[in-house]
Length: 489
Image (tube, rainbow, N blue to C red; front, side, top):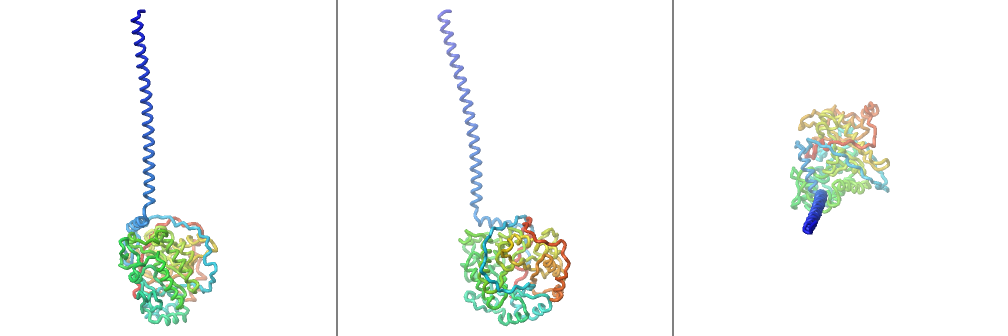
């Protein structure tokens, strides 16, 4: 082979080798770059979704309590309609029960109870009726099984209905003379062995709120909150309000009342509550905790004075945590301290289909039976041996023509409710009629009632106690009523 040919062959071989090596190197770098790109995209996607989820969680956790309250009230307003005496729920939604809290506290362990309990069967009476028509109402009690009266002492408008010698009330001009001779009234009723209950409206108090604006509920702009009736409420978070109420109840004990009954022991249900600023006290306590603490505080102060303590609550809060949170009433927690808890379970206050009853107002017996069955199941969550309030429900002795499906309430309808109380294994009840026109025909004489109670047929099915929690109930299928009637003083 010639030298020239060898040279050319070598050069070609060298170029080929270099060309092949470079090509393979380029392919490897291309694959590596693609792999890095895929990994980077994957990591970037993971980081994006992780960051987004973290931000969402943080956003939810930082949602203020006022925003949550506003949302709850907007949801509530969306399923309400107006009635002639207040607000009621038209479209209920489902909600779980409040979970019972562990509470190993031995409450008032050293309290020596010398009070005499009475199985009360009573009627509500305004101050003006107690002053002017007491003889007619007393005759009704004498002629029937009734033995108790619930008399307005601090009414729906914050007015104290007699000239109470209590300086904080005098200072704000809260005392009135609707009952001209309170001592004479009490003496007269006691001579007839009437069990006396003083009704004290708690946190709905336009008088105290207007005279002591620092104790009133305030909107975020600093103005005083007023409900749909243009009435101001006091702030349940304020300890000074607690002391004012306990002071009034203490005066009732000194007068000779057997029991104080707190009504409106709750927060307003008005939609404007979403804009209320409850103050610094609300930063560490929920509404339920605040109302429960007031109940405990009041009982600790008042029971040693020889007076029983009771409270009125919405029937809907027995099994609905939605309503309990809005109004601040826990049926379970309040019952750990009260002597008596008084659910307002008027059949007309429940929406269609509640407890499986198509039109609750038309089936008073079944509605009361179901509501008190719910009550018993809730209270059986309180361990045996611990304090548990006695249940004394408010029953309906009025007709409710403002609802679509109603019936006239007469002797049978009122009596059916009373029998449902007994068939639920409870023995006390109160009748409400804002005009005090009670249905005498629904009531037995004391002797007849004793015989009838002893010989009544066994209910079917027998409502046996159970510790099982309630199933989910539709919240507030009943109605948010401020009161079926104003007190009319």
